[in-house]
Image (tube, helix red, strand yellow):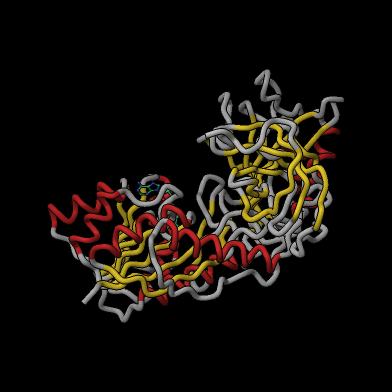
Length: 456
Ligand code: SAH
C-alpha cells in the first residue's frame, strides 16, 4: 500500500494519541504520523519528514487550533530535557490520557467489554516527587561544565540547575558540586573517548526520614580532594551517606558493582507506611514514595487478607510489597531474579521484625512451577509485579494450575497487562477491579493495579 503522504508534503492533522517518547500521533487519510511538540487535541499543519510503510514522521509547521490541554511548562527546559515528556500538558489531562490508555489496552488487546475501572489515582502535587536523581556530568562543546539530564533519545547533556520533579535539596547539592568540580579541577567523563573521571551524581532522599545520600560515579578508583567534598556536603541538612561508585566500563549502564562509602552510613533509611527500608546506592527502590504507598495499600486491599493466607509475591524486588502483605497474611513468599535485591529484602524483613516472609532468588517462571511440582506449594493469593514485558506464559499456566482465590496484578505496561489478563480470564478468572495509579507525573508511563478472582 502506498503511504497517503510523501516527504515534504504539508498536511493538516488532529492529534489523537501520544507515542512512547511523548510525541503526538495523528492520522492523515488513515496513515499514522508521529509529530514532536504536539499535544492530544491540537489541530496542526505538519510537514512530512520521513515515510515508512505503515507510519511516518512529521514536524510541526503551525498550530491551527491549539489543544485545550496545553499549558506553559513550569520547567524552562522541559522541551529539551528527556526526563519529562508531558509537562506542556495540563496535569488533569495527563491523568485522563493515562486512564484512557489503560482502558483502551484492556479493550483492544484484552478483548474485555466490561471494564470495572476505578478513577485513576493522581498525585496531589505532581512536582518534586522523585526521591532519586541521576545527573550525568560532562562538558559542552565550548568546554564548559554541564551537569543535568540527557536530551530525549541522545546523550547530549542539558545543563540543569533546578529539576522540578526531583527532590528540592538537589538544587543545593548541584550548586555545591559545580563549585567543587571547578575548584579542584575534577575532570568530567567523556563518553566518546572514555576519559575523564566523574560520570554521574546520584542522589537519594528518604522523603519520610529526610535522610540524604550522595553517590559519585567515577571512572577510576579514587576521587582527589574527597575530604573537601565531604566537608561541603555534610553541611547540607539531612546528609547521611556519601559514597563513591566505581564504574570503569565503557557502557551506558550508570552504576558499577563496587561502592566505597566515604562518609556516614553506606545506606539511608526510609519508610513507606509502617515498613522501614534500608536503601544503598545499588538497591532498587520505588522513586515516588507517596504514590507507592497508595499503590501498595491498593494491592493490600485487593489481596483482602485475614491472617490465614499463603501469599506469593512474584517479581518482589527488595520485598516492598511482600513486607506490606506480611502484616496481614500467614506467610508470604517473595521471588526475585536479582540476588542483591533478595539480600535487601531479607535485611528489610529483619529490621521490621517480620518473620513470616521468605525469599527466593530466581526467575518467577522457573521458581514457582518448580516449587509447585516438587513441593506442592499452595497459594491463596498471588501478587505479580513484572517488568514491562509482562509475565511468561509458563508462569501464567502455573497460576492457573495452582488456582489461588485472588490474583493481584501490578503492572507498569498496560499492553502486556491486557495480554496476560486475557489469558487468565479466558480460562479461570474474572476481572473484578482495575485502577491506574500515577507514579510518574509528566512522563508517559502509567502503573495499574488489577484484581482477578477465581471463577466459581
Ligand atoms: N515489586 C517490587 C519490584 C517490581 S519491579 C516493588 O514494588 O518494588 C520488577 C522486578 O522484577 C525487578 O526487581 C526485576 O529485577 C524483577 N524481575 C525481572 N524479571 C524477573 C523474572 N523473570 N523473575 C523474577 N523477577 C524478575
